[in-house]
Amino acid sequence: MSLTKLFHTFLLFLFAGITSLSYLDNKTQLQQQADLLHKNYQSVFSVLALDAEDGTILLSQLEKHASFQFFQYIHNEDSNFNLTKGDLFGDSGQLIYKIFQIDLPDTRQLAHGRLQVKLLTRDIQAEAVSRFTQAGIIIWCVYFLIAAFFTLMMLKFKRSVNYAAAYVDSLSSHSYDALASSKFCAELMPIGRALEKCKVELKFNFDESTKENEKLQRAAYQDPITGFDTRLRFTQKLETFSALSKEQIGLLAMVKATELGQINQSHGRSAGDDYLAKIANCIRKAITKYPNSECYRISTADFAVFIPDLVFKDGVPFLESLKSLFDEYQQTLKTDSIAHIGLVPYTNDSDPVNLLTLSDTAVSIAQTLGPNCFHMQDKLNGDEVYGDTRWKLAIEDLIRRRAIKFYQQPIQPCRTEVKVYKELFSRFYNSEGKFLPTATVIAMAERHGMIVELDKLIVMNTLKILIDTPSLEGSYGINISSSSIMQESFVAWLKDQLVKRRHIAARLVFETNEAGMQSNMASSYAFVKVMHSVGARVSVEHFGMGFTSFKFFREVRPDFIKLDGSYTDSIEKDTNNMFFIKMIIDISRRLGIRVIATSVERQEEKLALEKMLIDGLQGYYIAQPQVIQVMETN
Image (cartoon, rainbow, N blue to C red; front, side, top):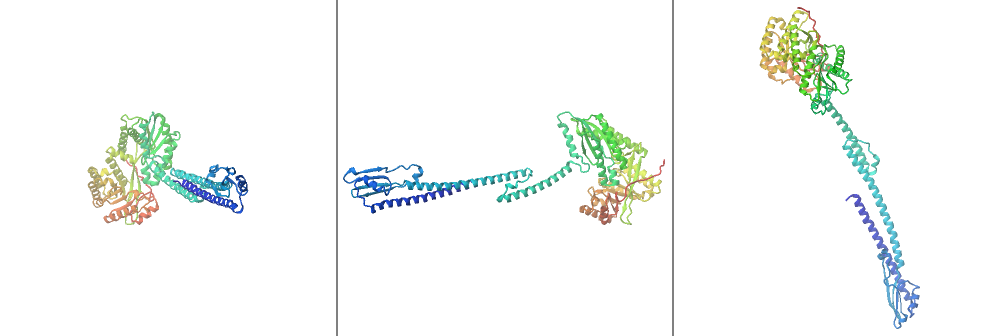
């Protein structure tokens, strides 16, 4: 039973009880008045001498002292003196009079006859009814006032409770409207305060979780550097092609930031991030005329742009605008190129694999055309091989022309007894003198089985400039492919070249990737052994990215270990990387191997690495790569 019903039931029984008490009290008073009336009537006979024989005379004498409801006088001898008047049972009238019904009969024997009367009680009965009615009215008026007041209070309380319940429901649906404090007065004030506190804390927690979700959304779907959508969104876009209900056409532009690796190496990661952000800004400016375009960063150095509702031939203005922006940025950045663009058409029924293959072909061809160039590829008709063919011809051409230039970046020793070297970076250029992206040249050379010839070109040109340029002193590091050192023919050729030039061989350090060396420990060991036999040295770069084992140290025994740049990033804060580097330094020092940190970009990183007793430092903060000026000879 609810509180309201319980209270009203209790109140009803309470006032019913009070009414009963009032009735009993009035009934008692009525009885007392009746007893007094009867007593007064009886006293008449003891005070007065009533000896009349006639009933009428007797009635007139008694009516002076009492009123009768019923009067009957029966003479003992003469019935002419008999008198009967009134009603023995009377008329009780209204129901309320019945509950106050009272009879005052009296029968006595007089000198000349028998007298039987019933005294009239209407007056005292009416008085009792009046008192009871007045009391009842007061009692039940009070009852209704209390009930009405309680009902109103409960209605107000119920409205407050309903409001609180609705407010809690709104909080569960993340609605944080202002709380109506006026609905929570007196005893409900603690509830109001609790709801207000709950609202504030829930809103704060919801806002915090929203911020965290937005961060996660940005991390998953928005690239933090460029602001473009990520590869996940790009994949979802490709998947929607088959779900389109109506025919749709458009263009897909693929942009490859070909200078990212070079900029990261020469200027540091922050410069690389800035480079990507500037390319993204160039893309945004170029698509301002195409408001429905969608931009994605689909890999480290690759961007994709969907331009809907544009036919193939109308893509030229976009390409020319983007190339112009890249050319302007190139003048500021002072690099050989910025990016290359491939443009292909698409429809709603395009196969994603074929579309990506076609766009990759277009970008590959654009890279062979020179800095910031673009290429438009409209269909797959066997031309997907054309991009590879162009690259194969371009690599054959640069090998034939020996089209390579070198940049050098020194490694700073951390102690006087440590002997380090300068690293050489290879740059390739086409027949027009325009630089080609180094990473792409190497990747394409490996694809076409020309990496050995390319590595031979690098080695021979390095030997040539060291012989022809006496001003170049000290040791120099050469990057060669790990796939080349696994081939016995290449190692034999390299040994033969170095044996002929032992005075130059002693100045050379051959750098190769850790992952490639670990793939074939026996070949790696043989390569290091051969290099040591001719006086050259070996450095393992990007160390720490593979599954490093003590067996690698013990068996291969390189001369230098170059830690991957990821270990340098914020090393002063990363205790895990600190522990790893200290362990590598300790093991390497016992084996006589020098440890070099790369990608050092801040003073804090330099100081932290020096405290760990690293052997050498390389990076943009230490020194920038510089072009090597050599004397041109035939």
